[in-house]
Length: 245
Image (cartoon, rainbow, N blue to C red):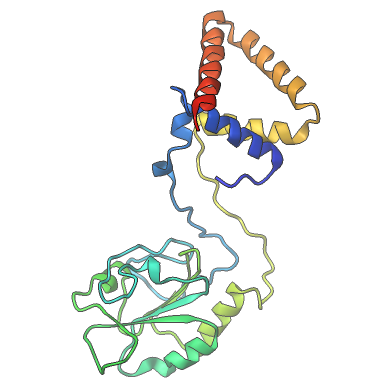
């Protein structure tokens, strides 16, 4: 929960206090409700040029899989802070080499069906689990962002296309369109939380503003008992916070 502004930070801090009591805000802070947001309209992605029967498309999140042959033990753990190529290398290589991909600034995960010569840095996928989840054929290459979103993918990649996609991803290529990112649906509690943070950013006298807001909400609610229960819940949460070491 990293707040983008002072108002949102104050709203977050208040939400944390209220979550100590029995309030609906506990659901707002439930980390199990967090989910990756797909970036299918990101201008940093390169659209598909091949026919695909499945697998994560550009902008989708790479699935996490347990892979014992990876030092990290699972796929997402192998993605560092640099763009990564997951390459289902075929015998022909399709004009690509691992060294060429690395010279583009990529980490490279080479996926093979069976172990080859000792000392080679490869991921063995003998049961085809990774191949199946990514709908990969021999030669398939996925370009993955450090945030685990797919930036591009090819059934039959070549060095020129991969270089263009990498340049687009790292903004070496000018992108002439504004990003249009999806906005996830918000619950009523989340909408209240965001509105409160934005209000606190716009106002100077926060105490007066919050007092006026509470009074207006109490009048609009028209239920004195419900308002008193809310006051008691706030007081109980503040007392709980005072007892927290």
